[in-house]
Image 1: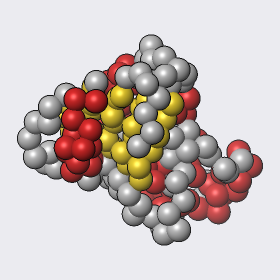
Image 2 (image 1 turned 180 degrees about the vertical axis):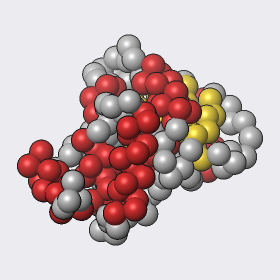
Image 3 (image 1 turned 180 degrees about the horizontal axis):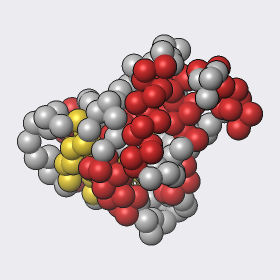
Length: 190
């Protein structure tokens, strides 16, 4: 892990977030200034030094998903160019880490409709990235000017970084026109 000389902030998101954060703590110890775990209800296995542990809903985001995401955004505010944000991502992050651009009930309804449409995880993430303030690389932008380093455990065929947890630190390669085309294909009668 290349550190840039300033503070080290660690954010672990997903069903394996607690284990990833524990491994980071074991390896980096006191180098970590502050950390946060955002994981599924019941997936935390106790406190980790320097880490706040938050739990939220999976597979559909809930109010705690939004509150945890807001806490993560607050944690990375005011960082400097020599600071590092280490983001540890695993499966489940799309629901656990969310700041919808639409009211949460609408977002939950849209996610539920995608689940029942037969959409692939890739198609679901194409749509979820468009409805989120933190996906499609937007969280990495919120960390600026700090450096962002990611370690991703993939549960997505093809291992595309923008698909793991809907890519909070990876740019969205899909255009608005392609996203609209995906929606029309999934919901032809809408």
